[in-house]
Image (cartoon, rainbow, N blue to C red; front, side, top):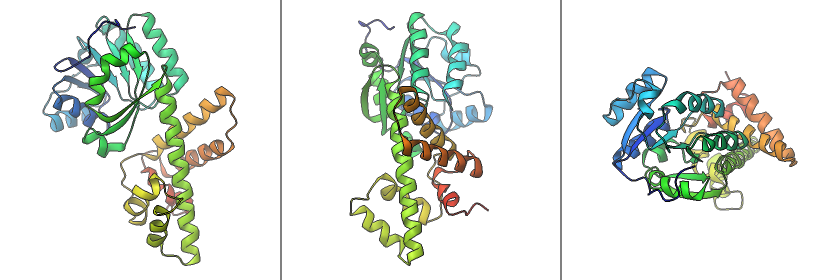
Length: 300
């Protein structure tokens, strides 16, 4: 665990960002813009090249080089299994007292176990998954759900503020990932409900745009009716920037958490099954709003 007397991590401290995908690249760019000495790394050469093009900074050519001397290491990776493998590989190369800021969408219980193991080795660990998508990653306005030791969160808070506008301290280690998974469950269930309502309305002869306007002025309003239906579904653009495989994973994570805790979630189980099937049918890299094509059987 980090020294409680340590000062907040402010620029120009060295920060490694591991994972330079659609979210990791703009998040790293925000850190660089804030004045941090950012060292980005991704196992895919193409992602390292895009990072260099978009930020003007050279990506590290190895995980070891990226984390060498870093005060904090941000991980933004596909899933918890990848996170665990990367953390194991980089641990021998971490600076004493370095803090891992785990910003992927991972299993809360697994995150807690990993963080506790790293604390025993003298490293700080917080989970800080995000919500807001690529657009808000670019402008640094993400919502960040941060779990972990309060003293460690105090140290990394300036770093988090460089990437997010709303920082929520959610509680003990793993709680950030729990909140993220539950949020995406609610988001995914709301999107399916809204899409089904539009399909029924169209079959009845209702104008979809009018129906969405009514929903947004009434009690049916949710994030999907406000920022997804007209923009990505009715327009058939299907380019929100968030993959269906990731949404399905997050919803399944919420369901696994419920099962581990012994909490009955009948709607959650059905919702997780639906999103899993949609991801299998459309492919993990389809935009998550394309679940409308699955629901309407427009999958050609």
